[in-house]
Image 1 (cartoon, rainbow, N blue to C red):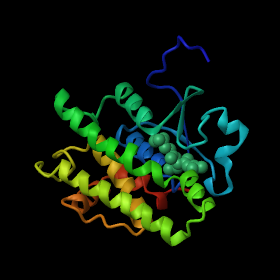
Image 2 (image 1 turned 30 degrees about the horizontal axis):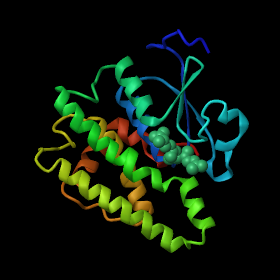
Image 3 (image 1 turned 90 degrees about the vertical axis):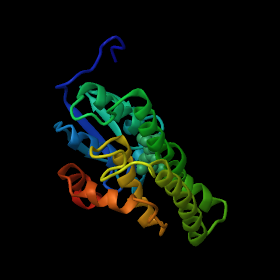
Length: 218
Ligand SMILES: N[C@@H](CCC(=O)N[C@@H](CS)C(=O)NCC(=O)O)C(=O)O
C-alpha cells in the first residue's frame, strides 16, 4: 500500500460483509444514502470465513465489514462511514454545528462502542465456552441492549422527529436501525421513547429498505 496516497471519490468500492451482520448493515445504509455504487463480497460468519488468511490480510480483527477503496482496505464501520461522509458530503450524516455533531456521535457510540460489541459472535462463543447456556447468553445480551437503548431514547428525548435528531437522517439513525435488528434477535425490549417511530420513518426510505438483511443475497 502506498501510504501517501489519499483515496477519494470515484474509486471502486468493495464492501466485504455478511447479510446478517449489524455492522455491515450500517455501512450498506450509509452507502445507499450517499448514492454511491459499490460491489459486495459476502463472508459467511457461520462457517468462519472471516477467519481465513486472505480475509485477515484485509481485516486483522477478523470482523466484517471491510470496505476496499481502490483496492486498499478500510476497517471499522464507524471509520468507514466517516470516510464516506468526508468523501461524499451530500447528504450530510453529521450536519449542524459542532455541538450537535458531538451529540449525534455520542448516540452512535452508545450503540457501536457499548451495546453492539458484546453481542458479536466471538464474544458469544467465549461465553458458551465458559459454560453459559444459550438462554442465559440471550438474556444477558437482551439486558445490555435494553439498558443501552433506554439511554439512547433519553439522549433524544428533547428532540422532535421523525428521525433521531430531527427531520433529517443522521449517523444516529444509521446505527439505530441495525441495532434494533439485533434487539429482535435476542428478544430485547426496544419500545423506549420514540425509538419505534424512528425505525418506521427510516425503513420508509429506499436506502434503509435496500440495506435490510432480508434484502441481501446470503
Ligand atoms: N467494531 C466493529 C465491529 C464489527 C463486528 O462485530 N462484526 C461482526 C459482525 S456484526 C463480526 O464480524 N463478527 C465475526 C466474529 O465475531 O467472528 C465495527 O464496527 O466494524
